[in-house]
Image (cartoon, rainbow, N blue to C red):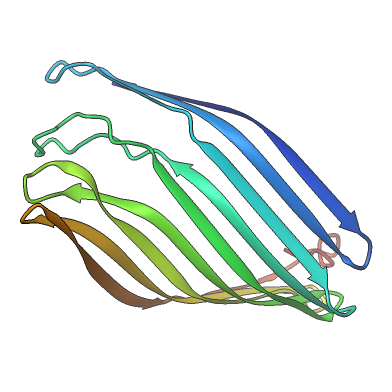
Length: 208
């Protein structure tokens, strides 16, 4: 049985100037606790109190063009070690993640929004090492370009499209002769999502 508790307290500030842009900054103190009770392994308890921050900003370049940027730190539950691992049932440390992105938003019409941006995401990767211990093996990083379009193309016809193109890579530590070597792993990926739907008259002016 696994019991996880997460609560946080923080502070956020936002400033906005009509027609010029806006800025937001936040900081949170997380309180993360996890207990695992199992009849086959000793009871496990884990506590962490990481500090998370985020910041976003947007600047209106023209009436229709806005530049934006943001960075966000996240926190993910990593679960417990696999049953086949030497440390089976052990609580894996919570994974601190972060994401940064920047780009341009363009409004060709008041009802259509186009976005072109770049992003980078980083998080730990957990798996079995050469000693069969389940632990964080490397930092997994994904970078890429994201293109999206949303809005009412014609009256009562709403369209959403999103196409992230990216590359992921990681750095895996490996002990050799008392030292530590970084192995770089890379992969390319592309994906496209497209949605088109008819809208009711009451919702035909909504933008996502």
